[in-house]
Amino acid sequence: MDTNKGRAYLQYIKRVEKFGWMIRVFSGFYTENYPDAAEISKSPVAFLTFYPIFSAVRQKLAHKVGHVPLDAESQKIPIFRYGIPNLRTGKVSVWCFWDGEKEWAVENITDEQRKLPIKWIMNYQFLKEMIEDEWRPEKWLW
Image (cartoon, rainbow, N blue to C red):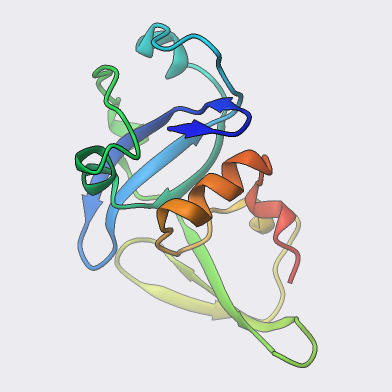
């Protein structure tokens, strides 16, 4: 995916019922058009999210550059977190966790839990902005 900072690389993980296509976004920006996809897939992962990647490819918002098989561990749905912020305070009073099957709520989350991916479906513009901002889940400090 092209950004204002260079090319960013994403990898399709799997389709998840009710949420769509889970992808991982790799850290860093590249100026060369098509570096080795296998090498890119070894890069640190900035974040996971849901994004209609195949639609983006059809619309030429993203480009397929290769196929790198995922190991079984990488194909698992991790625990995601989500919460609804209070519009007055901007804080989330109850966080929820989701493992792909069940959900549970907690009032407070730890610094380690702040690193969990956030359960949302991004559109092209939002994903591009998050990549350019070098966003990470722990930066979302509601």
